[in-house]
Length: 387
Image 1 (cartoon, rainbow, N blue to C red):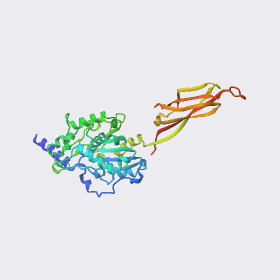
Image 2 (image 1 turned 60 degrees about the vertical axis):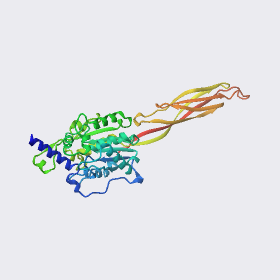
Image 3 (image 1 turned 180 degrees about the horizontal axis):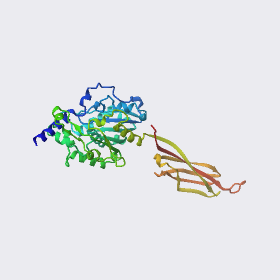
Image 4 (image 1 turned 180 degrees about the vertical axis):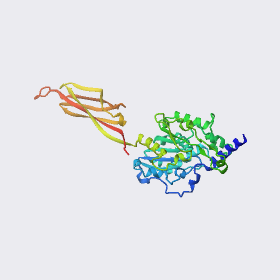
């Protein structure tokens, strides 16, 4: 038992010490990946690191930096790339998850993330939970978010975090502990599912396929290793129409693709292009109702003439407004309307109108009159952009 306790102790201390940076934190920093403010692209991809991580958490041992791989990839030309950071002390931290989620939001606001039309997230470990907490607390900004791709995010906690609490009093470890009474995780999932503002956001998941070895000398000698976030914890609550992706890497390396052929990269690419950037297109489409006849001394009127217009459900078309006018009018008088009283979501305009025949004349006698009702529909549609 003592030997087993020592193994777990060295393993946990190794994980807490190494966090999300490992030796790669010594790689010289490259220019931050952010969009030029005057020319924001339609979408922005936001990287959110995990506990004890930083902007270097995304760099592979060969120097490849995931945010730059995306930024230079022509298949993502409609998106800016932003690398988020928030404080995660290595020992005895003082920030709760709720506090860090607000710090994360403040930082993204400064980086003009919320000025984009669409926002998507790549989140690692704790970063996935903070992203969800942030979006729940800011529903207006959440309306811009299309999807979140989480890599090894402990939606049901982590066994390693439970052990680490013995050695480190960081409150984040309490939020990450593997326990049925983890109130933070239970409340987070309840709030997500109960909020109309965020429950529509797609959540996609990837999980680690290898154990993570302890970095400390004792841990390495004892060959201590474990799966930091289990399959079930990493995939809980995610979309069921897209299978979770196994990444053949440990908890740290799962977000460090060496090139664009790596599984972590290709999984995000597949999700991204199955949820393409949407351009909002507005157009005017007309429908004319012809053959509205009237006797020379009578009236033709309607309080609710229904005029439809065809909409393309594949483009999520909807009518945002409509107006009507009288057209092709001959031998009529006393015109009232036409007026569009309302428009149904399905694209039917309800029109009221009234007009009379011109009456008897000496030369023509009592000829019939006629007119048409022309309705102009202002339509908004969503057109996916090929990249």
